[in-house]
Image (cartoon, rainbow, N blue to C red; front, side, top):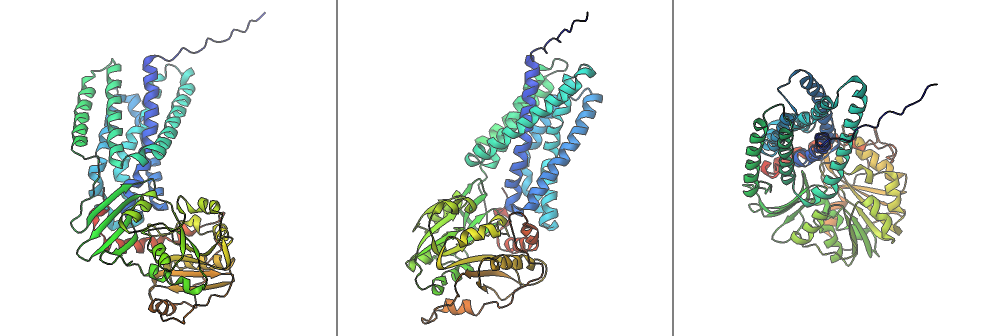
Length: 518
């Protein structure tokens, strides 16, 4: 008779085992924190586009692959390098990021938006991410006693590391970034890694802890001095512009700056100009916003408007001067606050802070005019340009209501298919469309006016702005490559590449480099 005897349950983790699990959790969280912070360091210089995100993800994967291999090799063959050394190296390489980011970004600028963004990410983040990836192999090695337990050890370590990554992502996005600046988070992460390396060194009895704990303590003291001297706050300094305000939000690095030499004020978000104002008189310097001010001439009884994309609030102010109440939607609370504090914006209707794709469904009213103006970083948010989104806006128009969409693009050549796609998408929804440009050049703002009724301007009252706009009407638009943009198929990000690069070139010529580096 055979008796089945259940195996003994695995022993409870010892204190050293729990410490190693904690190390894996912190390492996983740190990887995601560094990857996400990369957009806050590189974004102001190269823009937060698909290319910057792709670069950071690619660099992270390269570093993880390298770290897994090198970590496994060192854990097996180089006994003098142990886990505390790896964590210490990760801490030090994280600490130097804010100090070398400026020179690295400046040095890679001539490579262009895509190659430059990738190279900058590679130089800034490969070393700390590689060190953090080495944690897994070292911990697996410490847990492995015989082949029978290898699978459990590997599975446990990578599962716990993934949990750490999830926690790090959520804590950073939901709490840390809205509350603290990038440098503060980097310095705090450095201190956590330093403390962890010292703790691991003290727990490891097979080598002298002072070779790690003393350097960790020295670096920690240095970080403390930097914090005490205010290095955690990336206050912008510029010889050409006076910085009035800066704030780091979930969506970008928002700054208000004055060019006192030329007498204008700018609202910047990362590498975008959201508003430009003549300081003395408060007039907008962006020609497409001037054009938006004459839109009531296309609808004689206009009373209610919706503005999607607030910027400095100039369009809403102009509509208010014409007796039109305007609801506004702005995704970034930092931009909304700056518009009120520095650009004399005062809400005349509902003042909504949130993503337009979600918020428009909650407004519950109809409008005579909807202005769609969401340009940032050299491109428009593509999810706001699909046929589904535009159909939602059409359903919110009163009879004879107008949808005005501002879109920056090219009149011909590469990139003109993006303009053609926006035009084609609008034509599937509206029978009447008129198109105007702000500049008679290849690269310009296209102002699309779309309605269910014929669009005729009231020119009975002399208005130089209206005459200026009518002189810039485009009867023919590029058609080649145009598609109907949908939620299911939306290649606009790729179509906008040339535009993003052209915009960045103009931006870099007019804005001081030191305004873009943390």
